[in-house]
Length: 128
Figure 1 (cartoon, rainbow, N blue to C red):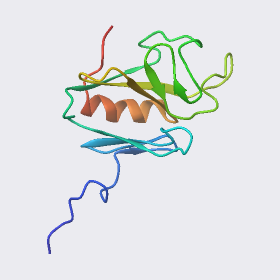
Figure 2 (figure 1 turned 45 degrees about the vertical axis):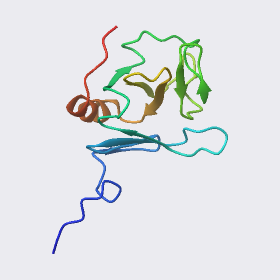
Figure 3 (figure 1 turned 180 degrees about the horizontal axis):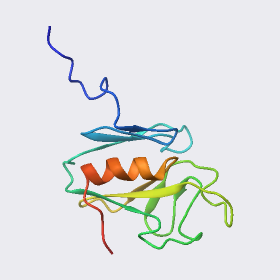
Figure 4 (figure 1 turned 30 degrees about the horizontal axis):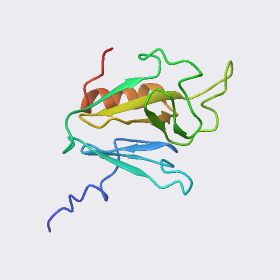
C-alpha cells in the first residue's frame, strides 16, 4: 500500500497554537485580520528564498511589534495578544522573509528552543 505523502496529512515537525512547521511549508495560524485564517509559506517559495530571524536577532522594540497586523517595519504579525506585553512574559517572535516579497511574516512560538531547532534545520537565518 502506498504511503500518503500529502504535506497536509503529515505530522508537523513543530506545532503550537501559533504555527505548524512542516518540512516543506509553514502554516501561520490566525494570520489574516479579522477572520484569523492561516497563512501558508512554502519552502522553497516561488517568490525566492525563504529565511528567518528572531525578534531578538532583529533587535525589535515594542514599537516594532503589533498584536495583530502590519507594524511600521513591514512585518505583518499574526495574532498574539501577549506580544506587546512590555516588561512581562511574552513569546519569542519569528520573522519570515520570502525572497522578493516586500512584507515579512511575523508570528510567535511557545517553545523557543524546539521551534528554533526545527527552523534552523529547514531555513537559513537572516543576518542583519
